[in-house]
Image (cartoon, rainbow, N blue to C red; front, side, top):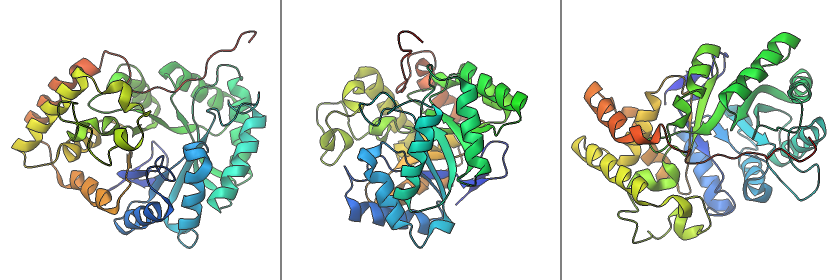
Length: 331
């Protein structure tokens, strides 16, 4: 396994991380536990989850699976997206953050979170309130580092400026949708991260499975795929001609290299500036091994240029995925 620094911090994370939003849904407890242990055996030390994944089951499964292995893992979780119907069941207010971290700590069976991330920018809460609360958690030892997710470049920059001005803990990373099928963050967010030393953690690196090539021309749904097991997932809205064409183009390039389309797509991401670790989901142990193939690929300039060319339309379009909280009336 290769390890990288997370942003300009001293924290080293595996180049491949483990995404866990399928734990407790597309992968049951036993399968999820096997995936976690396989990931650790392969040197993966970064595990990412959130308080809302599978209605908190993801955190609970991880907590039980890591009970004797907690020291081996850089554990990341998030809060901020809606977790209920109450008026304070979302956002990044002091109330919500302090309540949600206690629940996450209990479910994860730990007394600290290595990377605590705000799941989406909250336009209804002053950033000063959010950042002061996160700093208090760092000072209390409940959190070691803080990160953002689904932040625009100006939102991240504003947060970093407030933290510097007020002497507060700073976001060391930002987690965003990023892949050959979604290069929108290259327009503003990546230049911001390059300038400020924040690490980028891509999610949906395979565009919810589209870049694996398994959906072909889109007429057949592979058994066990995300679309098969979760028909309401984001892929049901994205399985259109432009994404399928890209997947076919990536598959053609991969075939020339005797590599899988998934490994090629992940290797391309690892070549991008400021990418610290990639969140790759797995529902079976074999998928963990398959994902490792990307670490042995050394892409030459002509391959990178070919991938840049076929994916260029996805730099100036709409994001593949974006999770945002709306500005509420009266605020």
